[in-house]
Length: 243
Image (cartoon, rainbow, N blue to C red):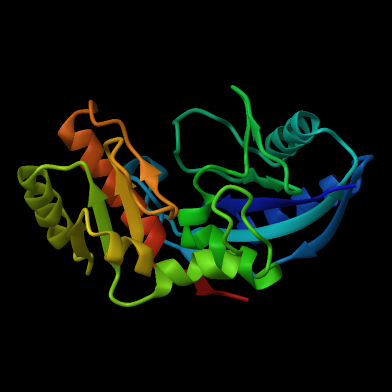
């Protein structure tokens, strides 16, 4: 029976109460036993589609005897029972239930990738998850949750870029300044990338074996900059414990 980890989030309605209802429904599901729940963390909405209301986030541990895809079906059914309606992609929602990890398994299918491909670079996931399981080792990056979080909390906040032009770097820096994000940009500096921060790679060059966000170099520049800005916010904005 693998120990699985799920992320809970929402910014519509009485979110804390929704978390309770969701865990009650999971506990009533054959083959699913909640065993741990983190404290709640308040975060700014990520991306323009998410609306203006703060998000509440948490992480829970589940012992399960269901296959990963069946567990995904259960999570999505609980979302619907708790009022989730998928209209705007990444829009405001009553409840998100993301499968962060299914034991130590690696799975990549059209419906599901585990571990969650973005959890390692999002403080609103890492902070509550690390509080529950600091020594759990990410099976892709071979770093513990505490080590992954430490990379994002180290000062100054470094954004290491690979495969970008000077023109792109300047445009991105201007966008970061406009958003008042205090980030130091480094270009193709392995020493900085190894020390911590967020690493973004847009080419196939050799880079240190560190966690990195890979982006398609053929994407339009404005879309790429927006993606990086969202990633910077998720990586470096500090969640606030609210209970």
